[in-house]
Structure formats: C-alpha cells, structure tokens
Length: 66
Image (cartoon, rainbow, N blue to C red; front, side, top):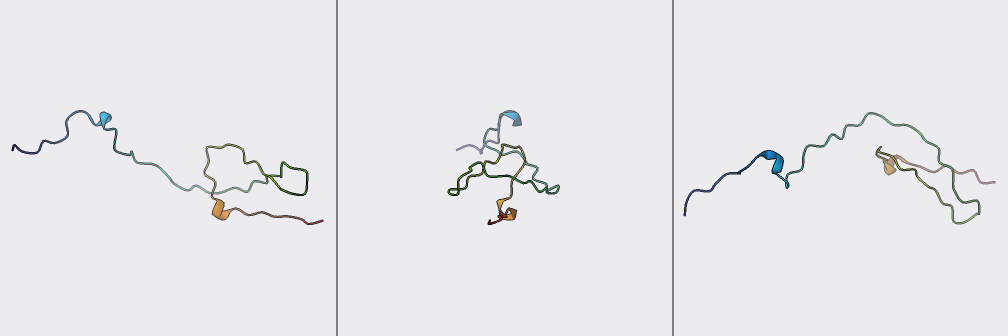
C-alpha cells in the first residue's frame, strides 16, 4: 500500500465542511403582537416572517382579563 494522499482540488469544492457562521448578539427590541382571532378560544397569534432570530426563552404573553 502507498502513502495516504491528502485532499485534492480547490477548497471551494469542499462540500462537506460547514463555513464559519456569525451569531453575534447585538441587542433586543420589544414588539407587541396582537391576536388574530376575535373569539374567546382559541387565541391565535401570527408572527411575521423576519431575518432576525426570535429568542422564545425571553418571550412572554401579557393579557388583560376583562
């Protein structure tokens, strides 16, 4: 058996390596989202599509019971 050969070809063709990803945290903002349903149950919310990350562990619901 001969020696083990190294990688052949340009790095741009390396399909199995995940490139570095920037996941820096710049801050947060508070957004009020009203329910889409007008009936009592079930209460439904629609979150509009966004390129921003939504951290559901820091999300909460505030309700006023009348």
